[in-house]
Length: 200
Image (cartoon, rainbow, N blue to C red; front, side, top):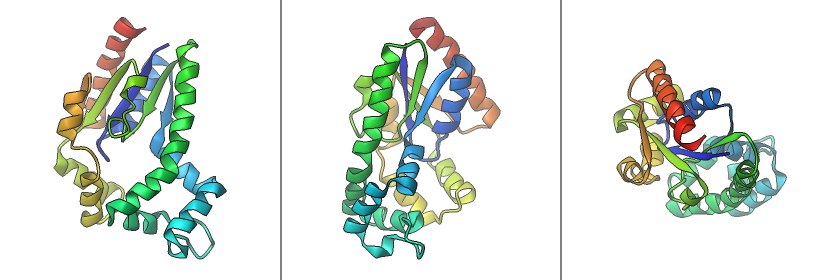
């Protein structure tokens, strides 16, 4: 069955769209961001590499990775961000590529939500790629108001990714998410109808 790639910028609504679409086409969803969080929370091999590269300052008093501190480190220094990506991305990619291989031979749709889909040259794995985008102002607002990040970190996170305009030009489909959740879900209905017709 088809494999769909969902990408976009941070806080554009990728995960919300992926979840809405998955309900409509009965698809499994792989969330790369959630996988990253799971690795930092549970994978002791990741912990060892993080400690080796970032030191004890990147850990809490309880000996667990401090995601807030790590975020400050990696978004304050592009070289450090590349180090963290080098630790996490191969593990994440191995998981979703395995799912893609299984989905191609199975009966169920697969949606893979990858923020850095284009940056990691992953487009070739998917039957279609959807970019979920919104205005820069809304990205900042969502990061500050919803995720409680300060404006400086929010701006650095946005700047660390390929510009949304470039992603939109490379995608086969674009969802614009400057409106309400209901509006996003309406777009998911239209997308589901399209994918069922042309990829089902």
